[in-house]
Picture (spheres, rainbow, N blue to C red):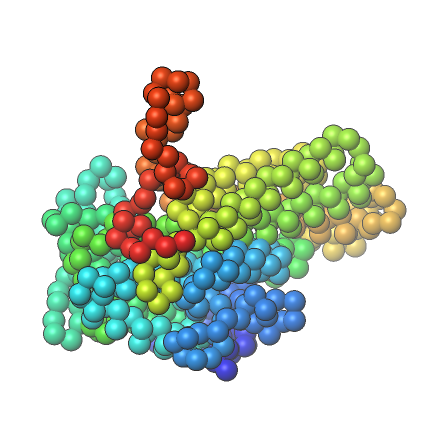
Length: 503
């Protein structure tokens, strides 16, 4: 068995010699002990622990045909629609365990994206990428490697193409017989400082003039020439306070800017090189995988928020009030919609190529993410309404721990006597930290593409002309119609057109 424990993962990233990682302007030597990053490490660690915990190991483990062994699902290649459904269930479960983004999904989606993309390229006759990738996949699975995925370029002026502003997109600067050299940066990279390896992908469809930007590869994070600048988040200073109430949840996530300064990538780690024609397909495959996953992790965080709001309503004696019941029901409705479309994207999956290239349903995946851009904000608003203004004004845990103030706080913030004031403050702070978070709000809007990106895909897939023909036929304007075999009035995506398209 090649499954690592959480402790083995943590020990593996303690000592790094080449990469430079910065937090608030200062270089970090040990990410596992730094107060700003340690909560992120713990969230990442939870993905390893889940494979050994009785309530989650059935979701967190999968059988790999590539290494003929059981592997952590975060290194698994989806072999069926059921695999994709297990992904959604696992992400929801892990959100309950962490109360945060656990940061391993982007690398997982990147792994599956490269499997499908290199396989499609191989079926057209260019097999080198696929053969290299399979060897890399075996290495990742056998060693249970912690992966980050890096797609988003800094982009600069959005109206300019990559070749018109080379500094704004990661690019190949030199090709040798042994490998390539790359320079540039990738932005908003989830969990980057907690990862062992990073998979880099192009961020958009490219033209022939942009071919030097059409590159996909993997590299250890601890590589000469790589710098990571960890970004700020809402209320992130609490991580530095060594508290255990205000800092809830104890696990959290981070994002960062990763800079490549003339970094060498061995050719065996290169999975796309100047194949500009396939860059758009790769992006389409990845974005659908990642958008599908949001149905799991965001509904899981929604469960945490719903539970906290319900508890706070009970603490002040209003949980049975009709307007509170209506708000809780609405939160559940919104939450289960996100989850349901994620499951639909999984179970209505599409087989694109031989050997189990299962891709999510692209329409349902984009609908999932479009709902996620909206519903977490509604859920947060409703939970804030239930919690009351105290969610933004509660005394700190340091006030509670001050002997001169504790008795006053306990007296004036007491609700139903079955609950202590400290319990109320703990749930208030949990609700604040989870609901008003990058993981639940900012990431829900911009992760896996901005809201307009999903709307473009949805608009492209839906066959308005066919729907119009149905309407004209039923209105007896047209006497006949050639009904499609499929019930859905949808067009095929570019990816489906080049794949096998078996459901």
